Length: 71
Image (cartoon, rainbow, N blue to C red):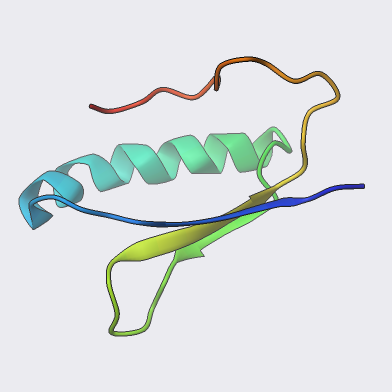
């Protein structure tokens, strides 16, 4: 079975990142409880702020992502 691994880095003002981080973590926690995300977490080194997420693909794919986007 395939597994998707995603790394991403954050950009923008630290104040904005800090404001949205609790909701983001809660959302990822809900996805983990539903079995949609196998695991995720922040990088802990001294490099750029970022994180890693890993999940299995759904049986049926969508043309658009189902998660909310912050613009």
